[in-house]
Length: 67
Image (tube, rainbow, N blue to C red; front, side, top):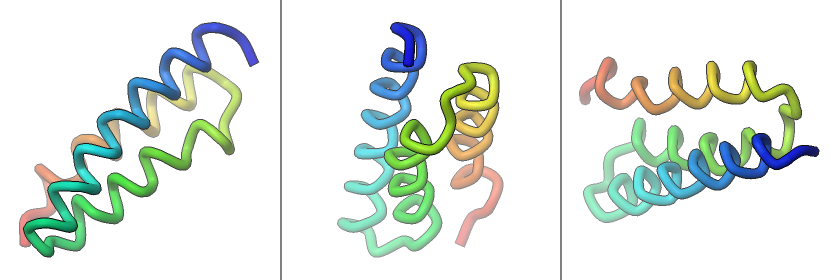
């Protein structure tokens, strides 16, 4: 792990916590799942480019799929 992986992991984890909190309080499934996944992806991907790509896609997912 390098500093950029840790930084991006913290950014996506913080955004994921926000999505998780919103999804839990509003009882909406898509932001809840997206938030949990955003918090977990830094543990599985060490490549910074892949981490950013998947993180951005997961952040856009609740806005693309509205229920």
